[in-house]
Amino acid sequence: MKTILFSLPGNQELTAQLAKKMNAEIGECKLRKFPDGESYTRILSDVKGKCVVMVCTLHEPDEKLLPLYFLSHTAKSLGAMCTCLVAPYLAYMRQDKVFHEGEGVTSTFFGKLISGFADSITTIDPHLHRISSLGEVYDIPNRVIHAADAISKYIKENIHNPVLIGPDSESEQWVSDVAKKAGVPFTVLQKVRHGDRDVEVSVPDVEKYKDCTPVLVDDIISTARTMIETTEHLKNAGMKPAICIGIHAVFSGNAYQDLWDAYVENIITCNTIPHQSNGIDLSDIIAKEVTELMHHT
Image (cartoon, rainbow, N blue to C red; front, side):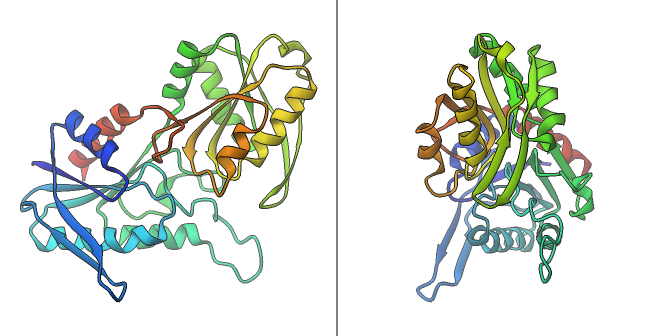
């Protein structure tokens, strides 16, 4: 079965990388808004009998959902065999329980929504802290890719004498995994969150790591408050400026500049969300996993 990739706006670079590595064509479509704000979708490429792969990272997802929905159903109406979603960053996974009375568990609602129009989903390190597997909230075949190998490789090849520092106890499992793969020590901080932008961080004894390069690793860098506060503790402890590594470069508001203004040497992220900090390419593993998943869909 032939494969054709469609890039949603902003995903062109990753789509081109995947098409080359999957030996697949890139489809052409028109996505725009009518004067009244409604969405217009037109597929210009032949999709009949093909597997359509829609590449769309779901950072700031609300404006992207309807074009995805229309693209998927339009492709199927034109004879596509299946529509597979590649969403390197998967939104709404952090709302995984009722935090306050009157809320809904929107991670589940979002999963049902996407499962209603896509035949499969491939994503990278979704926020699964209270959810044991993506299959709990998505009713379609899925692949969860882990960035630990790529991050550990980057650390080994680019950072001298590193010590990995996880932002909180929730991160310990994957931070320890990265540290083990990179063959370097790690420690995990304790974090108490009082609100969206009010985070208190306690740092374990780091005196023995003063000659090391501290590497802060987290899955999602959003407000960056945890990393910023951590760098202040490291500075007060007499350690070197930190290198900050994140999988997903969400960077809400001025968070990216705020982090640069802190005690940091560099900021590196994976290319799950297009951003100037992208320095770790995951297109090889994405292409491999998407190809394997399509063969089982």
